[in-house]
Image 1: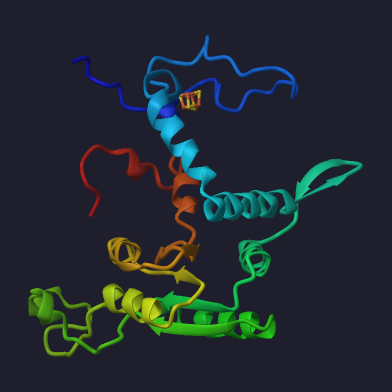
Image 2 (image 1 turned 180 degrees about the vertical axis):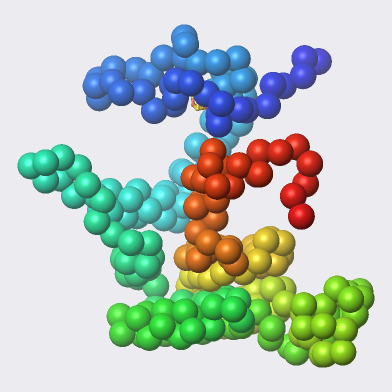
Length: 233
Ligand code: SF4
């Protein structure tokens, strides 16, 4: 059996999946690279596309696409963006007819969670919010050693509890859960245990004001240490 070549879209120089052609023309794979999944794994793409035939999925995808469209406006000067992600989130939730939103937030973003809750309530959503430290379970419960606690060896420190955050939002039967600033790994567990639809408002980045791409944009200059092969401590 020949081994499948894994997709490597991030290195693709042409983007044949989004050709700049007229509506009556057909996309061509002639110039797509050897690692293009449209060439190597068409059956997986076909199977995925058939999932949109499920009416609920199709409608969700349609509304998401309309939301994407509405984040732009066409002006005499050309196309430009208009909605920050918070507005995009609110508009999408309204489009879907959602009434009850869940908010899983990091203790470090408590103030942001409060502001966001006010904004959402102002738009008539019911908001169920759960902080990451919920449960007040000491970090020792998951095998953390005293010297591995941020608060110091002599202090009590609650573990982040993304599983409980997910389960509490599942229990509240929120229409949509919103992740706000959970750490790497904690967010992974939250997604794993969430049984309601989830979206992300912001990811945690302690250094860049929760904008991880800032470091990427500076990878050729001030953050060039990101490019070294050994792990930066
Ligand atoms: S799907 Fe194919 S054409 Fe599109 S970015 Fe990936 S490799 Fe390139």
